[in-house]
Length: 227
Length: 345
Image (tube, rainbow over all chains, first blue to last red; front, side, top):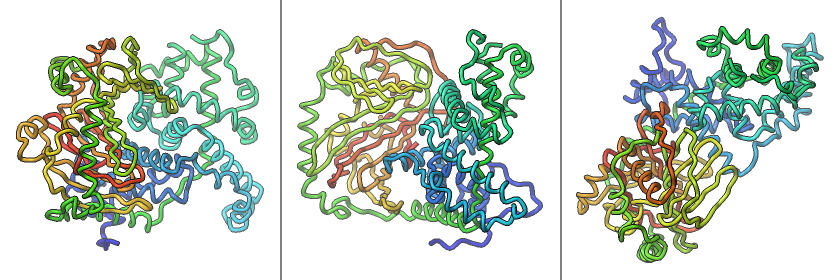
């Protein structure tokens, strides 16, 4: 393990304005370890969450996130400063995820989403935030697991765009860059993914106080009303 | 405002949506269109519900590990050993390399299709000139050269066009493969293969890899192993090779001094290259396609803003499934101005 200077992680906590991504990239290219720490501070959490949701395995997410950042450092010379760093990193992370899934030759493992009951009970016993409202806490965790399961059941291509759009607020154009496809394709994938999620989570939506059955119960848009 | 535009706008994150020039028209359309209101309700509700999936907060140790891995990766790149011969590094490949080279030559002679000229590379070069229509990126997936395994010589060059395009199958269809949503056609006489994906159309063509494979002396030896890493359970070597001084013409034409192979020792050697000159390369492919009777959409597409605004090319050198292979047998011919990236993408 490489020994890091203490300032390499969590750096940048002073009164100076935070460096822009462009500045960080320039410094990292020069081998500035403090800048590497800042880069990680800024982008590690989004990447970690993206890979965890895309691959569907929280336990391997850190490995993939770390692999992503190794690739980032190796490819940084080729990064076009005019491009958006976040989108570029997401593209690398997405490639790493695709490779990992291809290697594993399997759908994302649903163990976490499929077998939540034991964990739920453990969480229920340990969670103090909702100590006064155990039913609410249980409900929240059940809903979270239902969402995980629904997202994990999407085809890879659809899951990828859903995660980028709804969890990371990427625009269709940015998603297209990450996914190496056209904006129209992103829109189409999102459309079908949202339809499917709405169908699968429809009853939950009603329970959660979201959209009512009068909308989700009717999966077919009214005929002849498209402009 | 059309429903399709409305739907697209609804799919954008709120901030982007509100910044859109046609955003003011959205409310009016939604008021009048029940179908779009339905879509809006679905998007918004799914958005709300997905927030139930809590985020993971990385620990300090996670971040430290990431930085450490980055520092290590940099250190590996800067710690390049002077010289390491392939034969010294991979003694098991030594006795088989000659046989492999011979096998490759035989395969190429047998399998290379007869094109308009005796030399396919020359044909490619003659076919160039002109048009720059292809956008941003492409991949090459050449050469599977196993030793002790079944020799295969599938070599592909893929160019991705993000806009829509149709290629007719007027040529002599040799083979079609379908895998998932990707269909690959192999078309005579130029051994062109067109890959159509749902989101893009790729063009696949054997081109100067021929020269690369047949000319055993193109790459200088010894190659250098400049790094080795473990991405458990895989072992990955970073290998640097150079075009031999005996091929100044090629070196000048290719403009490629150094090739970095990022080698998954188990099965694959991806080579990642980048060049402004790939627009030219695409012109070659385009000309070949035209010659082969594949009508092309004349629409010009814009350079991609992804990664770099210029073109890039990725070579995946698939190696000996289940058996050792001889990377010294690899010969690479890339256009002028090429530089090499060390990673996929």
